[in-house]
Length: 350
Image (cartoon, rainbow, N blue to C red; front, side):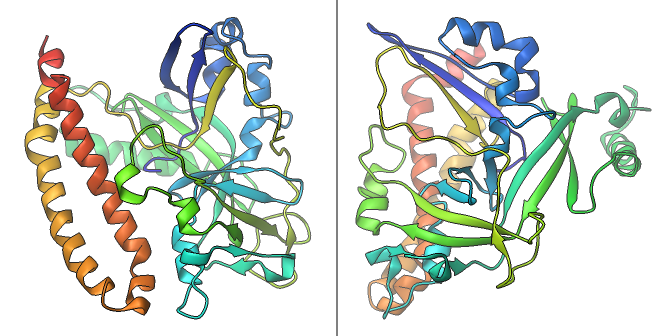
């Protein structure tokens, strides 16, 4: 997650063919922008069931996991579900030659066996409000970029002092649409997040780097954690006295499966979109920046791999770092391949 923002990606499957209405939407704008269309596509809930500040809604069951992934609350005792690779660093930190949880998996059979993870956190979005006018106050077209940014920084600092929040809440003001819009996020961050379970990597990372970024995949790509809170259910530092977090909302899991034509949406914390980049920028990514990043990571992977193959303890210690480098390496390779095979620069130029 490069930028804190809840967004939606919506896809709908028909009986005869697949089609999708792709895009990213801030959830507080759904009622005015997307609700009618989403209902026509088969959505059975209202926009207020997705985002609301006056009642529990789906946003209260979705967290930013560690600032780099999305996780979902799936029980009334703070149980979190996320991807295997999102929990991989925590799994690796608890692993040793004697207890190789990467290779063998890990399961806590009671809450007392759940493992603490220093530095890991889960952030909930409490509210989102547009503050563009306040942030861009005093901005004119004749300002230099440095002058413009200085004014924006001062406006944001002043604005933060006026926004009401609880002592355990935080305020984040972020730019969107290349700095044309600004939104204020009031958040709550829980810093006691414990590892509950993860399958062996042979399941959680089945196919490994060969299948990464490919479709379809056949991996059991999940890990499970639990949020703990103070006895008042508010964020608290790790303590043996903390109790499982009681969420405002948790997701129900249906075992009925899906059928053709079911409405589907994804709700979470992605990175940023570059859909509207100029053709020159796309060409630079394809010919300069991506190839450079690929080459650097190829050398790094070869060095790390050489040492990991010789030492099982070192292999465990470097597993998460290697996986992170390999993840980006494979992604950029596919990005270059896709841009070239689809003549992306030519299409952008037109």
